[in-house]
Length: 337
Image: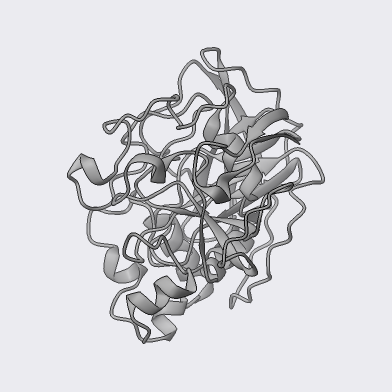
């Protein structure tokens, strides 16, 4: 077993903090919808669905022992403000559902937003319901010239419309995946004393799943018919329509998220803190989140990070032990899959 110091040298996690919580993001592909979560440490998953043939990165195929045929049903429910508690799973018919027509454009901050309820994994004992929001396509500001060197240069980038899970993937949903497929996570295979099972205490069904690797997250995503978001998709979604530096605005606010200064010292139920203008919860703090993109330099950057690699994957959002610029929407980290 490698020491934390060795892991730090390899760039497997934020060099300032222990390697523990991460978060995953789910995205679905057919609009294109992409979905998956962060499974390298402590991770939670969120889904994002893109309405393009884009989010070009492919997700490595996992081989669960049984894989259902997934044709998600997407329902759009207009609402003034997103709900502050995670959705309650609903029962599904045994027949494979068929997609509904393409969702309408989501509103800007302060207007009605389209909330998408995605139901998938039919015929399984445990059903998963994801609440998704539409992230409208268009230009956005990527990067930050006043942040860490790997965050620059700030530049305009364009993405097509996509859908993203409003909440991180929780313990109950990951447990349903394991129950249905017999999947064994990396940490369990390695005999680690800490795994998603040891962190899944009674009453933590709606806490984000943790201690999962990137590959574990990929396997979950494949099972639900989604993928992880790219780094660009994640940043656009986190910054909101006004390109905020933090999910809530341009000024740091220690009480706006579950971080080091909250005093909780652990994960909380997803959605315990206010959503960002798009209606996404916990885009800062709680647990960090994997993205599909390799950890490499941004276009036009001259900075060379010794951890840049086509193998390492990006990690975003900060965890419950982070504070300050480490939970900004532009902060970048990396991990070994």
